[in-house]
Length: 142
Figure 1 (tube, rainbow, N blue to C red):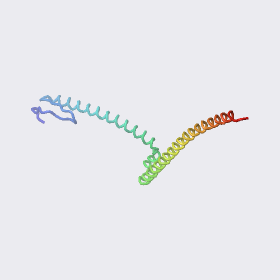
Figure 2: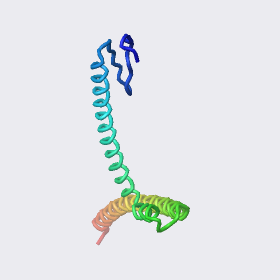
Figure 3: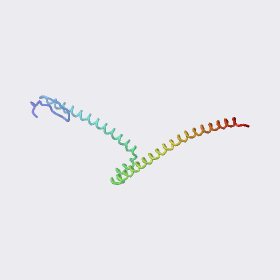
C-alpha cells in the first residue's frame, strides 16, 4: 500500500479512512479489533442465553437422560431417535386419554346438574302432592 493512497479501508465491518499517516492505519486496526472483541463478547453472551433456553426446553420435554446417553455414546443416534419417537407417541396417547377423561368428567358434571334440577322438581311435586292431600283431607267428610 502506498503512502499516497487515502481510500477508506474496511476492517471486518468497520470503515476507517486514513491519509498518508501510517499511525492512522494502526489506530484503525486497533479500533477494528476492539469492535471485533465487543461483537464476540455479545455473541458469547447470546450463545449462553440460547444454551440456557435449550437446557430448560430439554428439561421440560423430559429428554435430558436420552440426550445425555446419546452424547455420551451409551446409545446410537438411531436408538435415541427411536426412543424419542416412542416417547412422543406415548405423550400423544396420554394427551388423547386425558382429553377423553376430561370429556367424561364434563358429561358426568352435566348429568349431576340435570339430576339436581330433577330432584328439585321432584321435591316441588312432593310438596304440591302433600298440599293437595291436606286440602283433600280437610274437605273430606268425617
